Image (cartoon, rainbow over all chains, first blue to last red; front, side):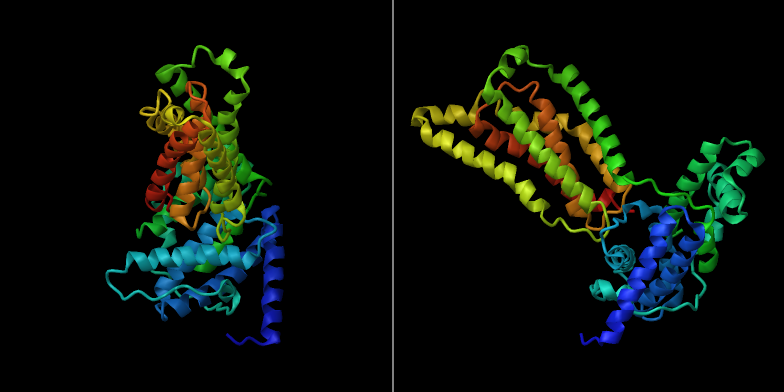
Length: 191
Length: 213
């Protein structure tokens, strides 16, 4: 449990930098939000790899699942709450979910640990995920898939996507929102 | 899909999150839930005919006061437990306080009453149907509260389910007060508490199954 002052300082710096990026992201700053998710995915990768004993494809699945959850549930972050506690609770929930699902195959390992640990290390070397989100996305109904493809992948505006598909603007927005939730459900469902 | 591509996808064209999105979700759930509970009350049980007369009596107001306080505490608890990494914290005190105050009042009333009257004070005329009626009237609120919590991100599912059930039970009891002819503290201290406990327990049992996300 010994931790040097230097690394304590680094935790605090990571916390405040990531929190700042997230808050800007919550206000609609896509560039800051991108940086936030990128840095977060590296922390999540290190966190899950350490706990899944280098089963790196499963760890990568969890990184993606947790990123989707963080995005879909981002309205639940409270400004007065430490970001590390929020992220850790989500990551731990997803980890426990996975461990429970395979409890019959493997011996359970204890995933309980400090909230700080989620920012303790970072690994930007992405492996391939086992579950292919691209395939899961292709399996969504058109009213969800097309808005995600046009707005999120091709970078069109909502207005442009609406014109292209003949859908209304609000249907595009709802399609993106529900589609990402459906994607999260599919990746969790072990599809 | 590579994780970097997912990150790019999620960040692309991200829209601002409105402040108070969580509160709005609960407000919507409670609005629909209360409307549903009120309809159920009017059509299935009916409003007591002497309501206007009873409302003139100060003792009538114990019921709405108790249930409303408990519902607010339940709302606060559910609101916290629907967020990752938030503990119940001091909401415990707010949850326990209305019940403890009611029990204290009931004890004082019973101590003050003649021994022969005590059973009447506790059982009233409707003790058999009261708890199940409260659970029944709470059903729309129960569904609405679980919907609100499920769409957020609860990480302790049994506790989050219990808090949603408590919110539904207390709000349902508030609605049921429009039908219920009882008003003594000992009656409320037993049968209302039992009635509210039914959806609370149901929430704790169902939470881990249906609140997963």
